[in-house]
Length: 137
Image (cartoon, rainbow, N blue to C red):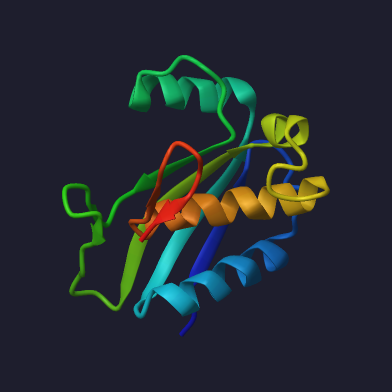
């Protein structure tokens, strides 16, 4: 059995499902010792702004949002489930914003999107970072 990475495209992904899945599976293999399912939504500025407004009370476009379903938010830990596969949650990426900020995570759009997906996955795994983007484990 392998980790399941589901790709949903409101906007065409610049990264193939196979490349995205391989990248995220490597991170999951190193950081999570149970089989996991993760959904990745590639979307528009308007959609991510709406989600940001609804869920974070920030009426602005952002590059990536994570919606964990298996996190104890007070402890920052993944909550074990009795099933064999844990649904970790959804990562939402704005492709237009990723285009505007190429260079933040990667030198081209594909690398930028992979970096954003990795960033979102780390949040699904319960990791957090400070204002400067330094991860706190």
